[in-house]
Amino acid sequence: MREFVVLGTASQVPTRARNHNGYLLRWDGEGLLFDPGEGTQRQMIQAGVPASQITRICLTHVHGDHCYGLPGVLSRMALDGVAHPVHLHYPASGEEVVRALVSVASPGTDLRLHPHGGPGPVAPGLEVLPLHHRVETYGYRLVEPDGRTFLSDRLSAAGVSGPEIGRLQRGGSLSGVRLEDVSVPRPGQRFAFVMDTAPCPGAEELADGADLLVAESTFSDDDAGLAAQYRHLTAGQAGALAAAGTGTLVLTHFSSRYGDVAPLVEQARTRSGGAAVVAASDLDRIGFPKRRRASS
Image (cartoon, rainbow, N blue to C red; front, side, top):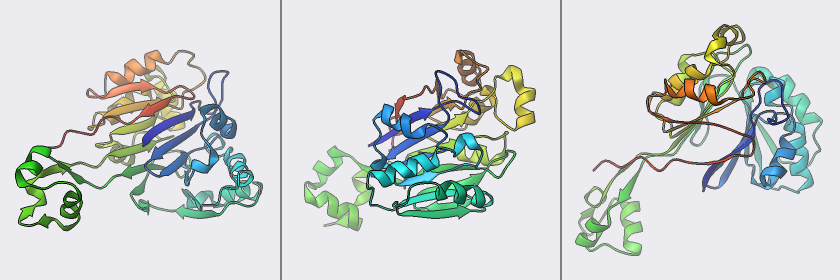
């Protein structure tokens, strides 16, 4: 199961309708919690997300609206008796802040700290790239390895069925039938998370080819000066990221100055290159787009 659960969508100042940041990505057997701001523990209850589902916590940076919910989440995991290891990824320059937040959480969670100080893989399939904000910030990308899709008519013609299909997949050939004879390439799905940044090469690389791209949209294009001053994206700039082959763009991290974010969606859509664009609301559940069509 792959699903993106929105726990909060506000930027620095929460509103009556929008909690501080917080997002859970269900990805097969893992639960990745991104940027838990204040109130994330309560939002998890509202969304029906048990703490036991979290296997990794990923911080883009250590500004409060992206990490002050960490002690509460960890305390809830300890209270619920979560026994599996929980891996915490964060920029190395935020070590002091992260240690302080972890120190006030209830003990009992098998928490494993993984600071990163540069681009590259941080876990199987999970990588980070630097963004351009006022403190050290990284975006995340989760990539499924490319695979192959079996074609039923070719399998039937080759006389391959049942458990033989698994043996063919593992071995690459079976009784003279090659894997490529009965299947076509299947691109792995990609998820990208781009938060708090001015336009930069790292954001562009993360977004390239993402099936689901979550991007901050703190400011309207009309407030581009403020966006540049605080090193954030405008809605149009977020949309431009999606033009590099993104399937669905999810806008979030909205400034409290915008009661209605529909205009921001339109600004992003005009530059998205045809990608689907949606504005996240608290407690939304967003499924992954269908797999890209395999080439024959």
